Image (cartoon, rainbow, N blue to C red; front, side, top):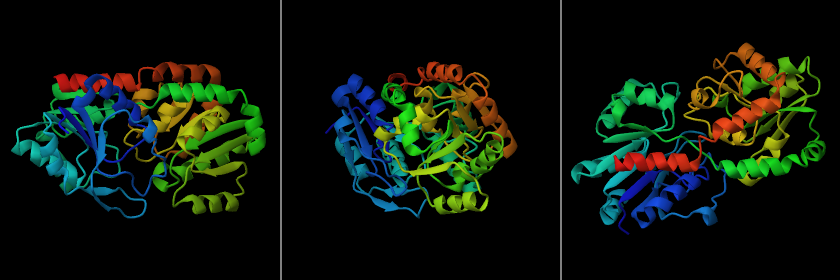
Length: 374
């Protein structure tokens, strides 16, 4: 059971499996992942156990979570498990979980090296309470090093008191090859798929939860303005959430046509929708990163995103592969979508694909290893 490096993270996410596999290739049996829980109430994704090539364990847990809210895991055996595995290095994903605090306590008591893996940024709506900010500053000061996915998180950790020289950037990544290959394959039957679904000529695509924090009403209002002049334009919403009925009602009351609510789609079904899309949009009001942008870009799509998503400043180059706009500004969102739809979408999509090659599971894993070796 012993391991030199342990990652303590929340749930088994399909997005993280390729990265952990790459780390395990290099550290072999010295590496292990401890999950605080198998899943949580907001997530419907499948767990692809056949793809897991690393050692892992799901800890016994008590989950506290209101509907649609952030989950909090308490793992009473986490210190016992760390004692049993006796790692030299512990990497914890975030500071908000009770078990993260217990891991920090263990590291202090037994003089272990603790690395904080944080995606938070200053635009995240979950934060800003003075007591929470004070706790975060204390937590950050007690970590040896830090791993972040990009510039927004890098800058936020410095605000919290982290030393710049101790912060390592490990880019957030999805399985680019899967999305590129599967989407290219689905493009061969793109028109047939659209015809079967009843989609119009042009498609704006959104993938994510249907909740207010994701800016869905902003998107519907922007689409309403766009569709006045583009009668062959459609909006496809992939996902589910507590706001879905309200959004359906809004479309009905405002007589907004060509909005397709497709519900939740598992990862293996997403490439067909990415292949059908012309522009991908993430109108979020709060987002630590936004891995759906990675998926869309690996699928060769132009992207439009609000400026508060952690990924926005790293992945989107205005007028090259899409546009960013000010969060909540419907006029700017409408203009950004219009400009992208009127652009050379094939060229924008090619630029997206080129940019996302630097955001691969392999590169993410190598940055983790660099932080570990330091």
